[in-house]
Image 1 (cartoon, one colour):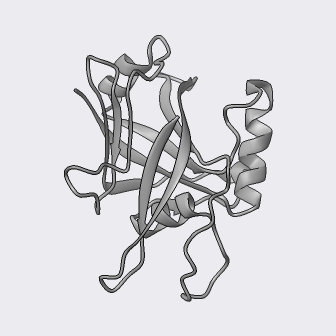
Image 2: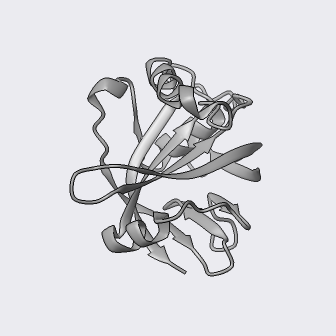
Length: 171
């Protein structure tokens, strides 16, 4: 688990919301090369601050992701994953995994997890491709892996899933 503060608001107004994240790295088999995936999961559905900007309410994690360029997933059957400028991830030799958004202060990355379990082949695949696909939302990914696909689809249909392809570099 990683405790992370998300920054919300526009026009110079920032509100800090803290939540716990489950972070999972996995590989998706694809023709030619496996694709590295990262799941950032706020299983508690932490509510976003009360921002009167209109639109549908989302949780704090999805709101933070959308405000910094990730796209909202509404149809997991026809998933389009945009390349998102300014976002990046790194995994260092000690196993610390860090995700940064374009708005992060240098001392406060979007997400940092020490000693994260990295599946075999994940780091070489991410290094070779130079990017990974990030999914963020309330998807209960820490639960039974056999139902992960169903939970991703449900989160997308509920408007509780953001995604984007982000740069990766080994640390």
